Image (cartoon, rainbow, N blue to C red; front, side, top):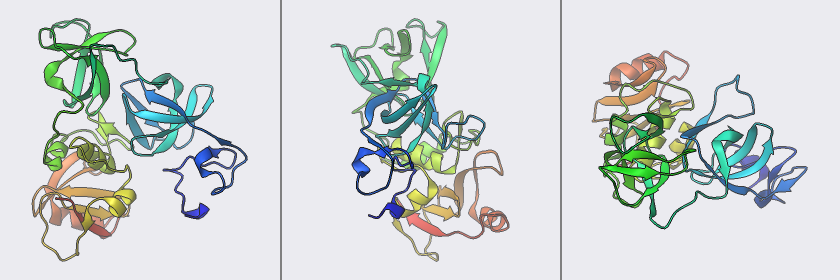
Amino acid sequence: MTEKEHDPRLNAIRSDLADSRLRGVVAAERYVDGVPAYVSAPFAPFWPRPDESIGFAATKLMGEPLNVFETQGEWVWAQSARDGYVGYAKADAVSFGAPAVGADDRAFRVTALRAPVYLKPNATAAIIGAMPFEARLIASAEAESGFHRVRGLGRDGWAAARHIAQQDAPFPSDWVSVAERFLGAPYVWGGETADGLDCSGLIALARRGAGLPTLRDSDMQAATVGAPLASDAALKRGDLIFWRGHVGVMRDGETLLHANAYAMAVSSEPLAGALARIAASEYGEPTARRRTM
């Protein structure tokens, strides 16, 4: 692969600094090895440059492993070891090394859209935080009164057993059903939580929630998810429709589910109406269709 073909969203490349694995492939003043780290906040926005005044490009979730290539003040420049995405995160959302795991602890994932963390193992106790869907966490293997003790949030808390599952528990078999759970969630560029997500974030998060590793951005998904589908083929549940900079998934042969700035939410609507409205916008006509199921 040539230097020109290396996407900086998926490769740690700057003119002054690059991933040491790219030495001899891309030009940089200096090459460094990534330092293992992980997201220790409930979630960590990833910005394309260290500037909070611009929109963030992606969201990394609690427990997500990272390789950090630079720490400068309140920022780290890092790459996700889960999906390869590169960006700048706030240093206080990241911890170095690996999460501490006790002898009686296990790795869990969040299966609720949002999992409150309680001060005590009781649904009436004070809430000290919340973890988003698909966050990874370390918690006690055994539940107490229907709650697992959660580690690593600054102080121990408790999550309801119904909100989390051990990491090796079976995933849902229908990834579209996962996406449908986010109906009505706000539209937020770069978001990947129930508090806000964008079109490709919805697809990536829903598929990961069904155990299907998926790249973050819509152009990456158009190149890698499923198989190409002819423009005149009959549509079915799970088919992806792509536009320039936009993507949605079919709930059935006629209904599109997508996070969109028109509704400012994850919405469901007849595909015919969406096609007409989007064709009149900057996104134009569909550019690709992919079959995923």
